Every structure is written in C-alpha cells, then in structure tokens.
Image (cartoon, rainbow, N blue to C red; front, side, top):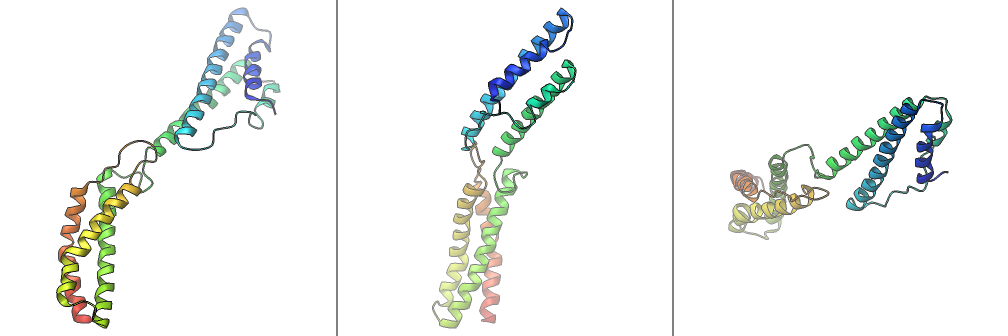
Length: 211
C-alpha cells in the first residue's frame, strides 16, 4: 500500500493530469496545495486528539483501501478536487463530533449538570432506603439493634451515607472524559438527602410494624 506522502504527491499530480489552460492549471494547483495543507493539518490534529484521548496514535503508513485507485478513474480534475474537499469536510465534522463526545460525561451526556447530579443523588437515596430495609429486617430477626439505633441510622446514618456516595459517584460518572471540571452540586445533594428523611422515617415505622 502507498504511504501518506505518496498519496499527497499523487494528489498534487492531478493538476497536470489533463491538458487544460494555464490559468485553470494554476487554479487547480493552488486548490490542490490548499487541500494538501488541510490534509496535513488534519493528520496533526488526529495525532494530537489520539494523545488527548489516551488512544493509540493513528497509523498513517498506508492510505485506506480504494483511495489511490480512484486517481486512475477518468474523472475531471474539478470533480476530483470536490471529492477531496468533501472528504476533508467529513473528517473535520467527525473530529468535531469526537471532541463533543469527549467533553461529555459518560452518564446521561445530553443532560445538564444539575439534573444529572440530581439523578445520582436520588439513586443513592433509593439505595439507602433499600439498605435500611435490609438492616431493619436483620435487626428485628436477630435482635442486633434496638429501636433507638434503628432510628439513629434512619435519621442520620443512611442519609449521610447516601450523600457521601452521591458525591463520590457524581465525581466518577459525571466527569467529562477529557478536560473540564465536574459539578458535584453538594448543596443539591444534601437537599435531596434531607428531603428523603420523611421517607426514611416512614419506611422505618412501617418496617418496624411488619418485622
């Protein structure tokens, strides 16, 4: 397979592949040089983007299959240049999409930071409720904890654990893949965990009657 430099050299030879006027040849040559410069710039951008995303460096030792054989087709030079311009534009758009995805967190990337963090804190509060039910069930059957201890965990222990777990998970799941600081919104998390206290107490009361 021909390497990248051979590919660029072949594109530059397109300007003399057909008998055209001197003015048209100069215009074609100028456009070919501009396209070649854009291709070289994109190659540097791909290398830099791969390093930023901690991915293997792209291999430019060979052109993609079917690229150079296109040069042998009886296609007018302007059409070839337009084709190259479209491919460079597609590559630029793909690179912009990669940058957009890299700047988004893995969890709910289309959401805004506060609603996304609220979901995490609410999920942690729900997990705390489940843990509370398990604790009450075990404590009632084995007599491990008294009623005061159960209500202590209900009013303080589980909400605090839910808040701390939420802060940790927001930092892990809501952090952009590349660059940018994560918005932990601890006040929102504390508000959600405090607002869940009546639910904790209600669950503890009902579970105490059941168990």
